Length: 120
Image (cartoon, rainbow, N blue to C red; front, top):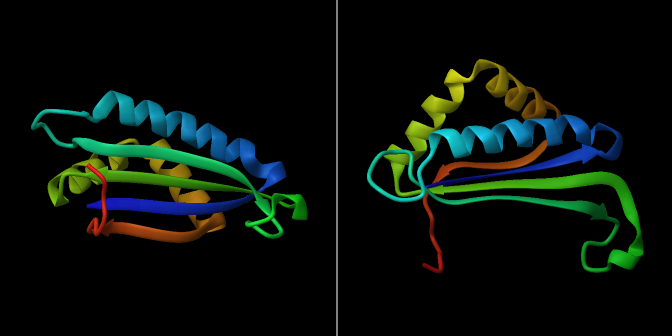
């Protein structure tokens, strides 16, 4: 089970996203496991960042003035995903920042979806 959320942030507002990503990574490292049986066990945690190009297949086309971010998390199953959500909501300030950024800049979200392809 996993999450993938994509954000499109104006270049002059990226500091808000970077600050959130710092606190989110700290949260993940402090509360999640990469092995064992104590949930949440995270199988994949990745954050991607790129300028938004006018034509994503041609970087020479120039940039739009926005930065794209993608956050991907994959868990063993529903128990891990649920444990992640519970722990995240316990960090009220970080969770409020996530909600604000999502309301303003989220362009797509896949939440609690089954994994249909993987290489592991």
